[in-house]
Image (cartoon, rainbow, N blue to C red; front, top):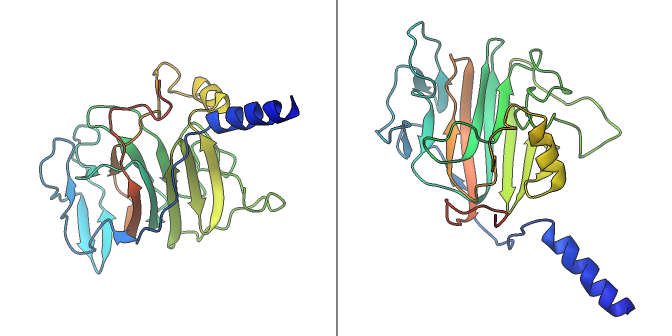
Length: 242
């Protein structure tokens, strides 16, 4: 009976998350630092915009007074990703309100997002603060719970990291893990029900999709966007099997 109980316990633990095999994958540039090659607009057309300026290996979003449809000037990867590790440097001005969205299918409005705002506009405790899983999970120092404050270079370059492996999503900021959630867990579902996405069935359950650099009135710069691609699943499939 003890042996059987042990087997059942392990089976239940394994069912709580959708794992993916860890393989040795080389990091590749998601952005070449010079052109818009590999990126499109939401309609699939090649990216080229006065809202984005490339200079000295930096991708800068520029403020404009001309109003256009939301996300029409955001940049989307041509390729889709399911299990990946994205590392990027970013600089957020005091007017910044942007983010990196992922697991995206064009036409879907709500997606998981690494929030990019100026640190003073979004405190560590905010579900819409810097590095949060937007409106779902506030950033916390999970690498060192005894240290409350997150180390942020105000007005300068910081390094973010998004890790998606199976159903688990992680956000990192300057080497510190700040978000760690299993998208198939009851805890995640409960947090969604407390968010602006509560009326959207299957929020963030998609197994794969594109990555988006959000344009939202400028104020954000990127450089050194690199990715490890651990392999894709079918974009239309739920990572939780439901």
